[in-house]
Image 1 (tube, each protein chain N blue to C red):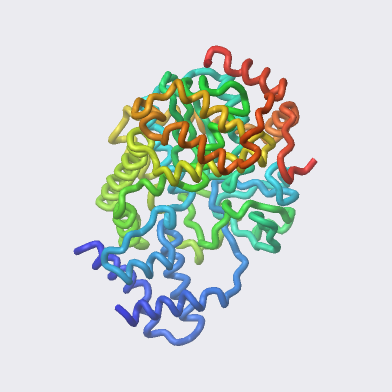
Image 2 (cartoon, each protein chain N blue to C red):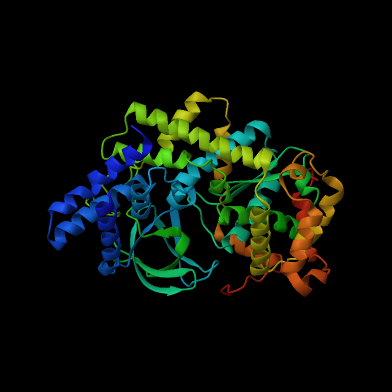
Length: 160
Length: 310
């Protein structure tokens, strides 16, 4: 086992030599922004599993180019929305713009929709329906910007 | 087979071929396969895989292995469990206002996005309480909103809860060992389609995880250190969006007569407001002494949105 651990360690050391700047979107939808600021205009929306090339860093933001959309603009995305890990795709998702199949071998595992379905079946009384309703409360960016302006709020680093 | 032995077997299967393959490409392929499997499961990284090989009773930390997607599904189930005990308040106007304010605050936090986004809901309860379920599902009771004299104070409550999400405190309350079990279940399953037995085990581990977090949120509360972290995050979030951070102090002062130490809600799960006030005063420095007038437009829209809630 010692040899194995040492070998695994060696492999881990060798990984950075690949010097990959490839990252994956790890949230359902991620806005690509015109500048590295929370309320900057959204230029495109990336989806879960999409692969991007990181070009630059500014604080907690990465300037990226979506790999499979040559026409998509270069934009900024918060680092917490990205992961260097190749992500599993869920069954039924459109793979044409996502990572290629040799990098993503398996369907989503762990605590996922499949497990939630099992829990719902065992506890039909739990009000997941209220959670579904709660999720619909997505406030569009223009409404949030108007809210800030009317309230006399000027966020730090916000674009005018 | 013990968990440790099982994980050893899994790791052995992952890395053994390396011993017999010499070329760089072969090594890379096998490494990728290992990392690919780990990442594809969405639950373990190569570092954790190595950690499992080092110790038969290794504990896998939830905060290190959970993907935002995993957190999202845990948060949905924790939220549904909370809603089983606290009914939601049906008030579209207040809900819209709460989400606009909350989502604006979340956008300037250190974790501006979660897998499914931040969502906020009022609970129809007089108890002074607020909960942050993993993934960004935040619940605030009417009793808590009554502690808020204005929008800035409500912003302080929401910013504190966003602080818990940002620091992923919910995951830290999962009982030790549970995530290791779930990790091994997923890893051992490998490339096969998930079988009935594995799905059953994983569902049990999922429900256990949800129970651990819900119990912490409703009964035990987080550690004092976690509460301090959430308060510090709240101050930063309020500042970044343009609110006066002393609003957090005002809110806590209003809470003092409404919360009985050891009583229901915050009295049970949070340090006494007086204690938090002292800590926050130290963090704020001279800003703590400032008393501010709420912006008239904010005051007006808060009162309007919360008609029938307060």
